[in-house]
Length: 379
Image (cartoon, rainbow, N blue to C red):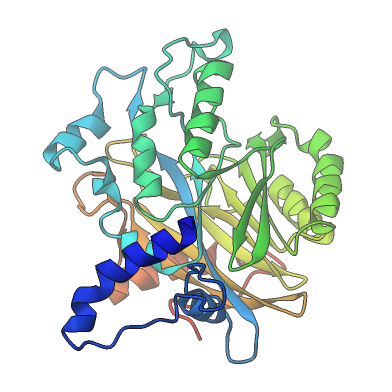
């Protein structure tokens, strides 16, 4: 009886269009038993749209440099909030020149170097630091409203406000639907029906001397990658490593990056130096040693404001994953030349683009497996 009443009500709602002579699409009803069902034609079309002509799935991914928003607790001036006020009060102002790029891909992964917390408790080990970054949890909207789906949390600033700040950050991201990746918590995200696993590790250098755990991580990284590959078709490893302001990787980075590939990683992404470093193709797998900065509120005017976005594609068919190449998008981390306003902006001038490519090639000359070219578009 209830089904009949519901059907009658719907017929009444549809009556005006029927009286007016308009054709009505009755495919949403099952005439056999009177039950109302949704027409799944659109769902089938959406599912079919993820496949290429050959039946494969093509995944486009974007990776960025350091992402630091909010304030430095050790500074009297909140340069991010000052710029936020200048830009009209919308925290998303910083993504205005790259949001279309990020929206067009299937996955964007950032190195979130900071915290999303209201905590002001600075742990003893951090009290002597010059930079302690925090942003209101509401600033997570910068990620969710600009197609940033995953954040690596293994770096030297996620613990700026101790375990409480770290827990706040991870909880805020997860509640907003942003996948968080740490050493102990793998980031897993399903894209077009394909599971992608992101692993993250911290192992920084000081003058090429390991201080961040290289020696203890070799075994763990290899074991984690092996376990992840047994479960997920694509495994991406993010490292926070190297020496700040270096344009070339250290011997520790090189050894660790290649070890990750030998263990089965499909891609290696590095950050920490605040400078762009060259890319290797080792055994068919790309190792990006450093992507520089991205949206970086750590400095009002860094010495070098050029950087890159790294994009790559994977094709998945019948359980087989193949790498479909990469491109870089040269950017300036500011839309202005005179100071850093935290708005990453693609470089359009050919001379500036060539300068970025030249820097990468020059600093990769000593790398055995350095890529020969840095395409700016998809081949």
